[in-house]
Length: 601
Image (cartoon, rainbow, N blue to C red):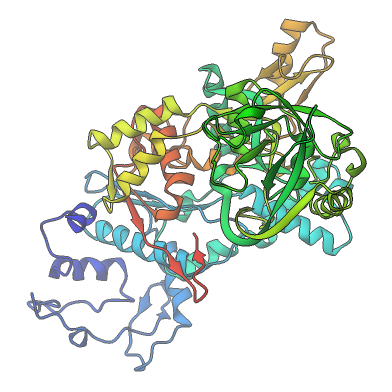
């Protein structure tokens, strides 16, 4: 069933007709068949019946001849052979036979990268499909490209600058992005050249980069349209914050690992009483952001304290209410939960449900702010050590014990992620997810292997809004302008260009108005979500490539980016073009090294 889906055809791949066609395409690889001789008799195929692959040699007219070669293959000929294939235009779609095209958009590797086995796998699988359908006479397009990889690329360049004793903040934004472009021009072509050396028969005349002019125009158009429909909004919410990278990262970019840690037991005095409640926490430094103490309503140990006040240690007597909630786990720690909604996702949801305030105690660089009093300016981990020592000195420390933690780390930088309330841009995902779910349910979109349908459906059915803003300098700048002197959360302009933004501002606020653009950039996956159609000319739906090749046929990639990329492409494709961006999703497995770490695309 799977094979039929991928290469549906009634004739054999090893048909004798393919051999003569192959000779016309490239005399390098196949000797011209003698009349009446079948190169591949059915069921008796043997590689030893084919003449040895010829060594390449150029003639006067630029066509290669095929003399006998040595028993061992001369790999130095590969690049020359590939260049000849490409120069003859054999990788471009041919519409002479007028059948429906077979189209694959290559998963764009990060421009920072170099090839690994994961890339070799997808190149091999896609090349098999593409060459098969090309030999069957279908117009075939394999569209290549690379991704600007916002966080990863900025990290690489910042480290390069650091080796020169330069920090990013020492440069202006334009100076830094110019450095990144220079780096990209020098090193960014590495992975494309390596894909060529693998022999990938993709159409390099249609190669794209996610920051090129065409794709940038598509990104801005997508943002504007989503905002006009009310699907993009701005707000201050708890996000995953990377202190070293100084940016928010999405839930999907946070990896959790089991690590050895410590559970700290701390006394909270009950106001107006000599009693204490003992809480257990893995992050004592967040106690400065406590807004309540919670117990389970049916926990007989603490029911008498519900409605009273507790005093937060080391805060000069700040009082917080003792409340009850069924979400409190009676069996974890002491059964008493400190509520720090500014620094914990579960606490944040509980605070919003109960109407509790949000208190932030941390700066964006991971140091504690003025809310922490004497601990202001200390790094979060330094503050933890000092606070525990002070708690011991004041008799408020009960004990600390080893505890296995589920630690959130940045997929890119590897540092521990800090939940932090921050103003960001979000996409409302539920309306988009409904259509993507329906496409699979109605059979318009097939996922291979089928077992991934359940994972796809579960994620889309429980989807959260997507934080799309990143506090970086490398990437697609958010097309939003603010009015000088106005509340930036209330007064802003969304436009396709600075000129359009100024014109709108003048119409609304007068000709003397001053505006400035949002400093943030969009999540890299936002532009990647448009890949199947932005690379074909969208938003210009009259573009020849868009009319000929969209929707594409197949999306092939590793199953680990089903959520990062694949599902988002389905949602965006349906939203902006009215149809699914591809008919089949073929997910390959992951290659792992000896340490069982995943080799990603």
